[in-house]
Image (cartoon, rainbow, N blue to C red; front, side, top):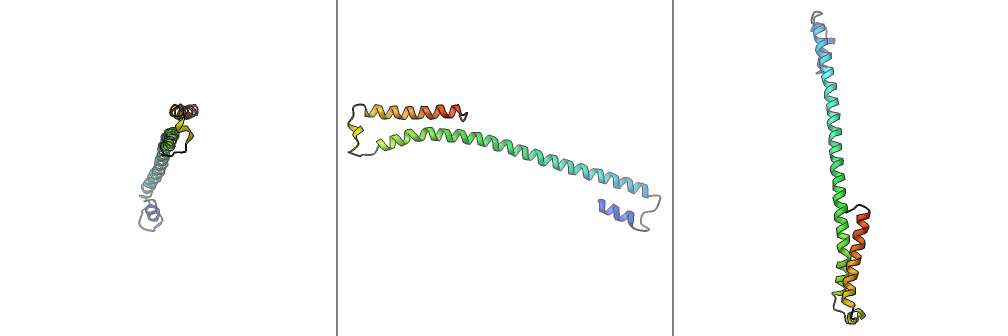
Amino acid sequence: MREVLDLLMEAKGIVTPTLTPYYRDVLDHTIRTTELMDNIRDLLTAARELQLAQVSNRLNVVMKKVTSWGAIILLPTLIAGIYGMNFRNMPELSWTIGYPLALGLMAVSAFLLYRGFKKRDWL
């Protein structure tokens, strides 16, 4: 629109001297409107980037929690998986306190991980 008005103002015989102030006024309004639209576009772009950053931060918090719970569950599962294998030559299987020791090891490892993640504010 601005280019069209500039061409009309420069062309000979199209815009009469009596209409020149009106065309200049329209050109000024066009320039101001264009600048306003550019400012609004920049503002909307900044708002969108801010919203995406907030979503990313929330996703990071959720991922930290999921990772923490996964790590807490991993160690007891690993211990249960090892003791769940049918090996004959595991000395702990013949111990009287073997089963309570394995359960205690699972509970202690899960508790230590939970406390560590809670201290780091991951949970």
